[in-house]
Length: 383
Ligand SMILES: *[C@@H]1O[C@H](CO)[C@@H](O)[C@H](O)[C@H]1NC(C)=O
Ligand SMILES: *[C@@H]1O[C@H](CO)[C@@H](O)[C@H](O)[C@H]1NC(C)=O
Ligand SMILES: *[C@@H]1O[C@H](CO)[C@@H](O)[C@H](O)[C@H]1NC(C)=O
Ligand SMILES: *[C@@H]1O[C@H](CO)[C@@H](O)[C@H](O)[C@H]1NC(C)=O
Ligand SMILES: *[C@@H]1O[C@H](CO)[C@@H](O)[C@H](O)[C@H]1NC(C)=O
Image (cartoon, rainbow, N blue to C red; front, side, top):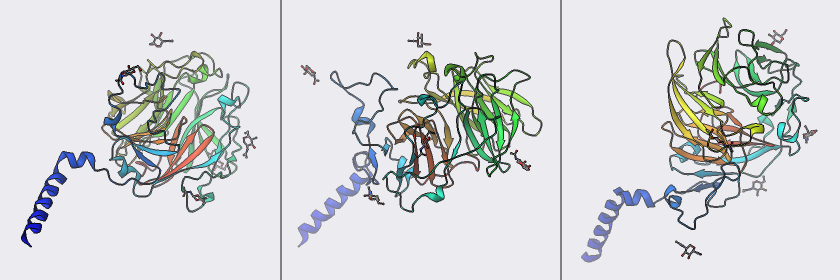
């Protein structure tokens, strides 16, 4: 039977041609892991005269498929390389009565609290079903007031950055990760003046400490009026020398470096204004800078990403140079060129996240903590 063979050959040829064509690439979507949803940017490029448009980036996230959080929202299939073959995202701890400032537990009259979770308490198979492991409160000395961020390990210790409270100064402290959690203050002023309210901190691969200072303590009624611009500083932990490395922000916030230390990312949360209210015409923006190899001043500022939900707060970078930021709808991930790959969509604000070794991203989200088990790894030992 010759004719069917010819038909088969023709069909094969057409298939082979189609497989190499743009049509095939654009229409054949690889099978997605559970908890993942692909939202093709073409599917919402035009909403039309009767479309449902969002009025506020603070009120609602962009969830056109109406999927129940938590889930992986994919805008570019390269996100599958970040997620790996069998990703999961699961709520691992929560306490609905405990949300610091918004629930009145930390303010001018109440210091905030630092808790510890132990990932050894997690069951073996996380699959998206919420669990609740214990959170142990650390008994920290009173030099630590209103902790806003942290990083480490740094020379065997945790580095906490603290906003200060009332007249008690903002500070950077080394904290013993083990009981009794004793602390040493590394810095609490700039040539005698208090910082505004210190916010976030990272250690550069060179060993120098970089941190942001911003007015949120005043905007949230627990610090006096600011005395200095919102800026990014460098502390040399060996000499104690402090200098400014970047300025001209609305409200500089999260900070991160690429693994080679050549690029710095700074989030500007200008749109979030505390008692002044939110203003969507101000920044919700991540800037990229080159780190000067000699002075470590941040140069060549450029736009890296603008978040579509809330403001980008804490930032992390993985080994491939992908950039993660806590935003109004969860954690958003861009590749090193600033293309939004996808989101860890939580339906709630995430202020920060941290890699707990390879393939484990711990995400802080108001009254909840999530763990994403993915393929990506942190760019630096200290993240
Ligand atoms: C939009 O809605 C109006 C009023 O219901 C209707 O007349 C019009 O056809 C709709 N336009 C489109 C593009 O669907
Ligand atoms: C939840 O947080 C509140 C306030 O900090 C605390 O009193 C309570 O013990 C916490 N609940 C649990 C189960 O940890
Ligand atoms: C996840 O595992 C729990 C038990 O550990 C089970 O009750 C639940 O149905 C599972 N959920 C999914 C989505 O597989
Ligand atoms: C904690 O105390 C021990 C014992 O005095 C000391 O060796 C260590 O440096 C202290 N750590 C910090 C971070 O202050
Ligand atoms: C929002 O910010 C813009 C730019 O700074 C300013 O012109 C405008 O008055 C602000 N709007 C409100 C409601 O504060």
